[in-house]
Structures are given as C-alpha cells and as structure tokens.
Length: 406
Image (cartoon, rainbow, N blue to C red):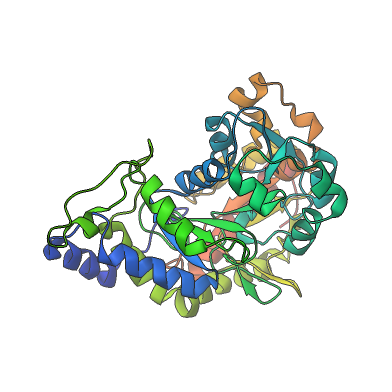
C-alpha cells in the first residue's frame, strides 16, 4: 500500500540521534538551543522557543497575552481541533468564522466577528498556503478596531490591540510577499509532528516577532521558564559549577523540547529548503499536471504571485459531489491500496463544539470545501510512479462512484 505521510527517517537522522544518546545529554540542552537558533535564522523572526508540540506553543502564547474567561479568540471553522482546544483551556470563547475558497480564513468574516471581547486572531495556513497576512495585520491596526480593544493585562496594554497569533502548523518554509512564515505576524507557531514536512517526531516552536515595544529575547526567557514548571533555570543552566539553586516563579507547565527530538530537527532544517521543499513541490506539480486531464478535478492553489506554499497537504477537491459520494470515493481509493485523508472536518461538525451550539450551516464555504476534499499522499520518498498510481486510483474511484469518464 502507498502510505499517506510517513516520516523521512534516514541514516543522517539515525546517526544524529545516536550521537545525542551517546552524549549523555538527552533532555533540553545544547542541541535544542542550536535548533532554536537555526529556526530563527530560517524564519527571519526575532527569537524562537522550541516546545513539545504546536498546541503547547499556542496555549503558552494565549496565556502570556492574558487570554482568560470572558475573552474571545477568532479562528477559522476549517482547522484541526488543537487551534480551538487551547482557547477552551484558557477559559476563553472560540469565535469561528468561515474561510475562502483557498481554505484559509476570510478577512471579511474576521472583521464582522470582532467585538470588544476579542483579544487574539489565529489565522491557520491550511495545507501550507499562507493566509492574507497584510490584510489581517492592517485590520487589527485600524482605528475603529483598536478603539474596540480593551486591555486586561500588561502585555495587552503594551501592544494596545488584538494579537495576531499564526497557527503555522503546516507552513514552515511558506513564503508570503517575499517573507518567510515565522516573520509574518506578531507570533507564529510551527508544528514538528511526525506527519509534518519538518518533523522532530513530536514538537513545535514559538516564533516571536513582536514589535520594538517588546523585548523578544526577554519574552523568550520568560516562556522558557513557563514551559518548565515556572523554574527559573533549566537543566543545562544548573550543570554549571555551583549553579544548582533555582526558584519557582509561577505554576508553569511542562512542555519543553528534548535534545533527542531536536537532533531530528537539526538534520531536517539543514536540508529543508534545498531538498525537502524541492521534492514536495515536484510532487505537487506532478499531481497538478496529471489531474488537469480530468474535468472533475479542482486543482488546489499553492503558488501565486504573492504566496508560495510549503507543499504540506495536496488538497484535491472533486467537482459536483456530495459528502457521502466523497466518502464512497475514498473507500474505493483505499481498495486500490492507496492511502488518502481529509483535511479537515470543520470543528462545528465535531460533537464537542456542536454541543456548545456551533452549527456548520453558519460556515457554508467551510462545509463545501470539506465535503469535496481528498488529501493525497505527499512525502519525500514518494516516487513519480507512485504519484501516477495515486492519480489513477483516484480517477478509477471517481469513475466508479460518479460514472465519470476517465
């Protein structure tokens, strides 16, 4: 069977992990700190903190900004549960809005959703395709929007407006108007989960890019403490002679990245731009070329004049089908021993969020995109022959379910 998205684990990664195991330093240490520096250089932002998941990174930033009960955070209805769950953890209200045809959050819908309770906007780069960041960054600075904003923490007072916190779980390496993901908003959070382009098995990173009113390095140090139970010295710092004593300055969390995980990331980041992204683009291009022969195939947008995707998920849509027919097509594809997926079931369709009163009928574009979407396999070792096999499996499945001609 052609798998959906296996990680790239080769000898370079194995050797780097073994080196870490033999070093005697396997928790947060020198390799994690080096990985952070390389991520900062890659993204062009101001500072990076590595954590054990993107979810942890998003929640740390919401809590740093003082998001709490009674506050609202705007996010797309079309995203994975992590984006919304962290808002719930903080006691705040997720305010879902609809998306555009390109799967990304609608700026017009954001504007309509802003209230005097809005503290954060969380755009999500679905499939690795950047959102409309200039429009979002301009919107939060408009005088009419700023006048609505009420500050309930020192950080909120200092920024004086809605924070833009980008969920870039899919989009490390994506480019928007010549700038890398990581430097496009106040704060960006990456994911390095096993299925991501750049993996550390599990992991994530907070990319700090706050304006000059903030000391991003000082915030990095504080978040480092917050990610380690509020302990003001990490294990590496305490190894210095006579430096064993530490303090707990708050009831923090436990979500630091380890050097074992960072070892994988160090290999990945060094070959990411000129190797991983190159191959993934080739796969996207080949899918698009082969699928363009079929009238029923709606080819995803992944390169425009202003945007270049990270080529994370190939979001194929089938024209003129229902959700039920899409599911039948997927079942037929699996019979051909090809693994596919769906990104994502919109959150208003999930039991927890339905029970909170959200209704998918309020997000028609999200539902239409979801109901016709099939994510095709994309990974480094997928061969051109494999891509052809996938396309033929999809075409045969569509023909069988819809009676379309090949």
